[in-house]
Length: 279
Image (spheres, rainbow, N blue to C red):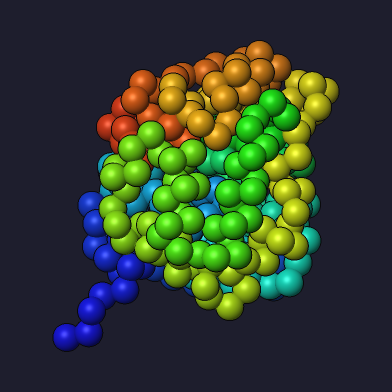
């Protein structure tokens, strides 16, 4: 029997009957994972890997929601076209993808760059969103360690476990919290056709900082979740978001870094389920 790919190994770890499917969204062949029934819950990963980054929480959340975890364009199993990869590009794609899946209303959870995309979507299409959760989100301030960009560039140019480990310590408090297949899959994606385009063609335009006025204009009820040991975007940026987004609040998870849903999945799911519960 052939050895299972890193992607397949991660699918095997999801504690649910998860389906891997494709749709055409805004002209982009888009891969997504689906599990569960109930209210629509969309998960948007950050600037690496793909939908399987959520492998620890898709199962638990699928017991209450119809979970849709997209591979954003440029990542995972989705197409990686030559494109701008800026905020409007991502919002146009997300609108098309959710419409193709018949979602008139949904909950939206975005991590890192996926959080910045979520904010832009909420500003342009608030009528689609019930509530929004931003997890270690980009776009909430300029006060973060720009030396990380160099580490990211080196990892994208020379995808290998060594460079991945150097960057990974800014992402996870304990890199061992992630299954080895996740680390390997992130390298697989970079080595795939077009796997570096989102970084080098996007040039950070999807994560530019939102102004005070833009954040005050967010109409969607919002929860921010941060890892207390976040080494990528400091907790102070989450505090800015909670201060400016009307009615928003910040929850901080101890012992977690940039991916609290991977590092502390039980605590993460409790916060998500409590916030999304019917009033």
